[in-house]
Figure 1 (tube, helix red, strand yellow):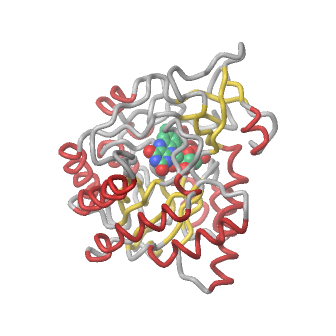
Figure 2: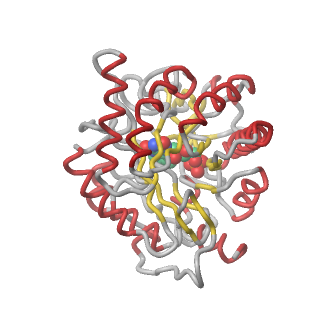
Length: 360
Ligand SMILES: Cc1cc2nc3c(=O)[nH]c(=O)nc-3n(C[C@H](O)[C@H](O)[C@H](O)COP(=O)(O)O)c2cc1C
């Protein structure tokens, strides 16, 4: 890798539990603290931040990781998606390298299937498959509360969660409502709903089912509104302009903004054709890193066009494939109000510092 911090802050060679218990690693544990200068001037949903840049839901599973990220100058940190009940993590390994033919991972390549790589290398491309594990709320509520307090001046923690399907549609919506009440207890000033996880062994994503999403946001909105907590929606890539426009028109009245994209789902196999990640429902997993940047930029541009045409005020967060300061600028030029990096930040814990050195 081109950066000095070659040990990622979340170590893919360890299990999820080992990471949670003993992490973070690499640059998040080297003791060097980035010092922001002056006053924070960017408004991010009512919170002042030095730079609208951070780490999206995923590689930051607890308050210790949040602290490491804030100390490295990532001013917006999203706590890994939680549930209203405890849920196991998929079997190890959860992150493996993926070989991509060319610079961009096209949707055609993803649906044709991909081959696992031998090592993590530049330009970084991985697949991740955790199954959205969750410790019970009795444990994550106090930990998230602690994480909220780790944010320094000009920094903010965002909570993220999802509802778990249960006994019918009403129970599912109720689970989203119960989750909203739990998140409210943590003091997190902003929340994001994860509607785009490809790792639950299902072929369809919740964000592609507009009517269901409207039911969810309609049900949870009063809870967050009464506490002044802006709601963000995490989206996957939409191929159809018509579907994206329809989704945004119907959902935007209930939320403060949209974050795109999550990973691009693809079948990942070893070179001998066998399934790369062990277990049922795990042939398909979420590919992320440098080769998906095109899809994040494309979604941001299309959402910015919809926002302009409809004279709406929702904010747009651009995520996907950000590994350099110029990727950050590209997202801002595409219309993003804030930018996030998961895979890029994992392997380059100086990324926020490097962007700040160029921009501020
Ligand atoms: C290790 C890892 C775990 C992730 N877990 C979540 C998650 O729990 N919830 C979520 O909404 N997205 C999750 N994501 C997706 C990221 O938030 C992000 O949308 C995606 O990785 C694309 O950004 P990137 O190319 O910078 O990695 C995860 C990503 C990674 C790398």
